[in-house]
Length: 473
Ligand SMILES: Cc1ncc(COP(=O)(O)O)c(C=O)c1O
Image (tube, rainbow, N blue to C red; front, side, top):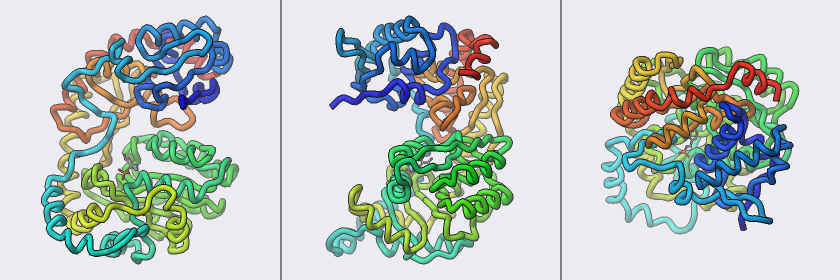
């Protein structure tokens, strides 16, 4: 059955859409971007013009003009009597938005597989007879992998037993399982803004009302806002990325950790610490895992997705044995375990992690330095923060036009995600996430495209009064 989006939900998803003049084109671009990011699936019925106009406090003529523009670009079709629905991609691509053959995808901040991985897979395959000797399903994960994960935590200063570990199909699956297990509809959940968008989606899908805690590359976490939010909303859980936060690349200081740890304990909040990017230090100086004294209210989520390969689909949850039991009981509705072969490969990869991390640091350093240098030369008016690790630069544009820029870059074969994609409750359209995980040549070409399209996007920048209007709407 086709789905439908309400005017209110569309207004929330659009965030700070009013980034250029005329308003109807800015609104159409906002909707195009939602289609591009798959946040508006194909065949979704859009709200009636009158309802969307009321939700956005616009005239109906403006919404009608935006819908007309979307029809012209092949993004929607409108049928008399049954409203407007979004169209699947091929029809869109036949319209205004086209994808070049040598397109560069920077929507995913995902490094290529670690070069030794194929060798580990071959080794694991040689042991296939042992692997298939076990009968039935294993919801918890193989003992060998849980031991490997536990002993790595222990060696990093977080004493862990295999009973504290549940193996999942990637960190995403872990976050989703935790959300479904811990949250009830209407619960508050604290989350950084900007954040990793699929974590926000998982929490929302489990019924959470999200409370955003701002974080920036320069200033880190807004501790005042965080303390107040814990005290005021008594959230059921808080989802954090304390090391090389995606997308800002920022790491928590010891003070940040103490403030979050204390506030969470007082509010009875479970802290979900996502460590997917934690070990991606570029310039050395790795610190202990965040919240290393591991109080009972800290649950860790880890993954080999960025360190080894996103296609491996092995992640885990480290929690108390009681919570692990509870998660195992909740798991069958979603899946019945993690593939055995991938787990066998993961055991071998973890044994080689120190070397793998050195290779990752080299690859990420090359990417970061290439993007930073190219941006400094070609777009000196943008502010490019310095980061010591992670997967991306959280760049500050000289105008809040990230959505328009992403659409223009897409037409020229470069896919990126606009700042608003990472926002929880604010616009962040002055920001662009530029991953540095891709090959250096692709990264340089992507910056060439950004520099080429920016002047024409910039022409549509809102006037100062336009920005003022945005702040009060
Ligand atoms: C912070 C963070 N957590 C989780 C994930 C998903 O990881 P996995 O591939 O293990 O599901 C990502 C992937 O981009 C991520 O950036």
